Structure formats: structure tokens, C-alpha cells
Amino acid sequence: MKKTHIIGLIIIAIAVAILVSTGTEASTYVDFSVAENMAKTGDKDQVHVVGKLKKDATGNIQDLVYNPTLDANHLEFMLIDNNGREQKVVYNAPKPQDMGRAEQMVIIGNMDGNVFKCEKILLKCPSKYQDGKVEFKEAKPEKQS
Image (tube, rainbow, N blue to C red):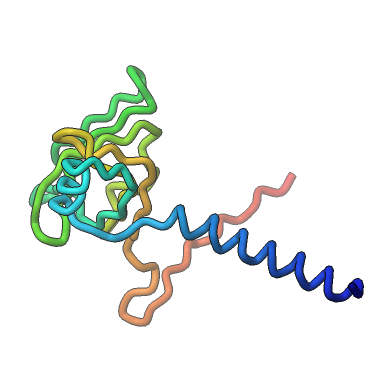
């Protein structure tokens, strides 16, 4: 066999291995009802759920449990999926920095009893570009010595 054939076969084998490995990690977008049904049937695959935080009229997050002095790696909150179902979510990692500003969020995990165990949170924060205007932060002048 020629060296070019061997190199070509190696490249094809690597490409197939990458496709197979990424295909097994893929999860789907569902609502809390589907995630609950999957858990009841024994399906432990992770899913993506899109939703909004439960907030009051002033924009404060309701039912948020986070005490970093007690346990910085434990966060509980209520999320409302796109079908309007409220669900308690438990995230065993530090609270995301701009969580309160998020318009929507995607949580990745699975149902565990009456709680959605979240492994990862993706936030969709308000756009910096609103009404065609770009927001700029004013630079502070540097102090000269």
C-alpha cells in the first residue's frame, strides 16, 4: 500500500471515531413533562429544558435558595418551561454570575424524583444591542503618577 492510502485510512478512522463519540453525547430539547416521563421509564439520558426563572412583579427571582456561606455549590430555583410548567431545579455548582438578568435559560440534566438535577446552565442574557443602539461603557481615565 502507498503511504497516501495509509494516511487517508487513518484520517477516515479518526473522523469516524469523532462522529461516534459526539453522537453518543447528544441530548434533546424537551419540556419538564417529557423529562419526567423519561425518568419514570428508566431513561437516564440528559436533556435540555428551555425556560424562564420565576420572578415577581419587580423582577426579583422567587423561590431562590442559595447561601454561599453555608454551601457555595448548592443552588435551588424554580424554572418555568415553555409550556408553563413550574419545576424545582437543583444545581450543585456555584450560582452563575448574571442569573438574575437572564431572559431565558437552558438547563441540562435529568429528572430525579420531583426535582430536576441540573448539570449545566446556559444563560440567554438581554442583548447589548437594543433598538439598533450599541451600549458602551465609559472608560475611566487612568491616574498618572
